[in-house]
Structures are given as C-alpha cells and as structure tokens.
Amino acid sequence: MNVIRPTVAVSLALALAACAKVEERPADTTSITTSTTGTTTTTTPPTTTPPAPGAGGTQSPPPPSGTTPEPAGWTVTERGIGNLRAGMTVAEARAAVPAFSVAASRDSTACTYARTDGLPPGVMVMVEGGKVVRVEVRRGTIATSTGARIGDSEDRIKTLYPGQVTSTPHKYTTGGHYLTVVPASGADAGYRIIFETDGKKVVNYRAGQRPQVEYVEGCS
Image (cartoon, rainbow, N blue to C red; front, top):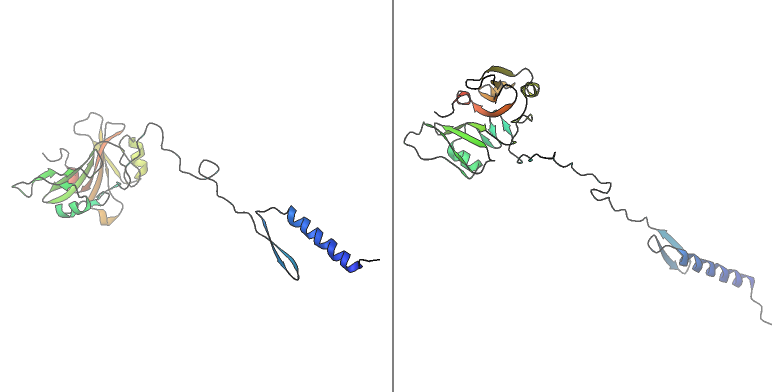
C-alpha cells in the first residue's frame, strides 16, 4: 500500500492555499513573482487621478455678469499704458505698439493725436514735439495699476490713492471735479494721473507728463 508522506501532504496543501490567494487578489493592485524558493507578493498603490475643474478642482470665478473683462496687459500708470510710456519718440512708440503712427506735419513740435489701432478701444495718445506725452482713457474698462477706472466714485479714487489726490472744480461740468493724483515716488514727480468726474463718478481720465497731462482741452 502506498502511503503519502506527511511532508509531501503539507507541501501540497500550502501550494493549493497559495493558488487560492492568487486567484482572490485584485488584478490592478497586486503583482506576484514566483521563484523556486517560494512566492513573493508586491503591493502597488492605485493611481490617483486629480479632480477636474468643476468636480472638486480649483478654477477661476467667472467675470461679473454684464461686464466686459479688461484687455490683458493694458494697465495705466502715471507714465503711460502698458509698455507705451510718456517720453518715447514716435519710433520707440511704434516699436512698442506696431500700429502706432502719427500723421506727417510741417510743424514737428505740434500737438497731435496718434493713430492707435494697436491699443484698446477708447484709448488715445497725445504726441507733442515728436514724443508721447500723455494717454487718455475716454471709455471702456481699462484700469490703473491700483484698479481705478471709469465709473468709480470720487470717494473710491481717494481711497485708492490715499493722501495723493487734489480736487479742483471742473472747467465745464457743473459740480464736476478734476481729481489729480500726485505720485508718491519722487522719481515720478513730473507725472500725473487726472480723473475727470461729473461730481459723483469718473467719466474719463488721463496720465502722462507735465504740463501736457494738465491740458484741459487736449490739443487745441
């Protein structure tokens, strides 16, 4: 009669148990490496996929309803708008804004307005003596570096430029004012931002070098 030795029986039982465990293992989280010395099990953590925007992810809030986002890169400072600055020659201005051009004139020192197809709508650029001297924002949502823009209240302008605003009566609008911002930096002492108001809100504003930025009638 054949007798199965106990050691053989035990080895067979262990092998069957190992096979059963392999079959129960989730295919996407465990890998099995088998050698002559036994069975080695390596566990691999599942891959995590980041949540998409709108499903728990982070995304920028939409602009307020009924408003038009301001064009990127066109911020007004006392020296100009974007990379177009007061003091630039016409050639330098054209390098900054390729569509920039000035009509030919017999008087190279005359005050005139440039053609500014490359700038946002509502922005005009004054040129005098062959150089850019001021920019004017007559409409639109273009803002200054502090966030001031057309439609802001007089109080907001004073809040955005604390201790820098001088108010004087408007020459033509009853109850209106010129809110003149004097730069805090001494290096910008020759420049100004001037907001024109109807007595309550900003209706347009300009920035640039003195005295041209202070011309009430522009080029006239």
